[in-house]
Length: 107
Image (cartoon, rainbow, N blue to C red; front, side, top):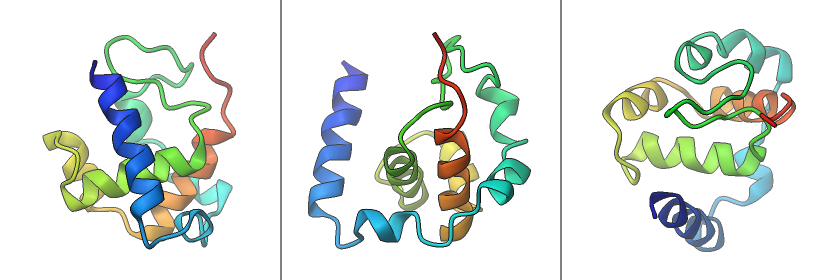
């Protein structure tokens, strides 16, 4: 049920947002994303396996960026993710998004 709620939230956010998909990923740098990914993979498995914490490898870059911005502004609630996203700027979120989008998803 929570997964469906997140999907509905993302669809609404992307369609209602004044920020276009291109803007979400503006300034993205895969190498910078890899550099920043160390904190993410502390909880989100590097091999993409979901053990109670969502896998982010292979996640669409626009979805990743939208979710991170939602945590950053408080539209999605999770204390740890709000703290992490709150410290990231737009370029850092975009860079992480393209980095994780390029990682192989769990099978």
